[in-house]
Length: 283
Image 1 (tube, helix red, strand yellow):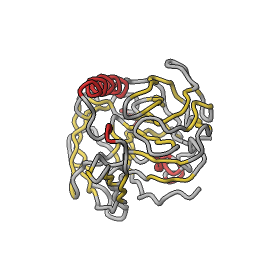
Image 2 (spheres, rainbow, N blue to C red):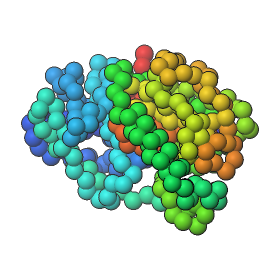
Image 3 (cartoon, one colour):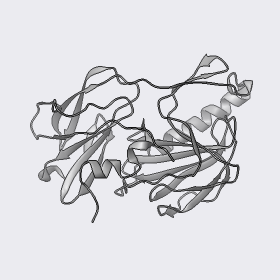
């Protein structure tokens, strides 16, 4: 399967004292939905790191320690600044978000998904609350960043695509779409714990897997769910089957990846890109 090009990542050394951290001029900047990685000094390696009240993902590779931060799709172009806390010490991060051109798609769906009735709206609100609770969950396990593609098929939707439903602009596409025959297998792209399943108004049958420390996968429009909430699974385990449930126009898998409650492009985590670029290969 052909995968799409990604922008590069860069590493910034975090300091203990307040100060502005700038990206090196000779490294490419990332765009909306990208991932920044920062090397954390050893004496901070066992500390929890927060952005506001949100704990951020930290990992260890080859006796080095890193903070991984997701750039929100809604980030403004140009200079952005963050204030993070390590052991209640403040560090400031400054980085640029460069412009990127995203695709546009026009999709036609059942009108009930455009203007849901009052009863349906009550259901949608309840389901949204359940998803928010799942997104807030913290699973204190280090994730395996060597992701594999969860389904074989044709990639029909990319992250960041501007979508128009029945002629009306909707939210940006927050994942990857893989089209395949109904009933085709879906596997877990990495190890994790199943924290939520269900059959929701927009998502249809779906699964949420927590890979650890704020990194979560959401698989929607399934035909069948083959795992249970609370189940701990390994990379490559069969978790479900491709379907056409919910707000869907044909059998396919929609896979979203959340990092610290922010949607990121799942392709950053495929083909060892995150690991190989920094020579952080697990021995």
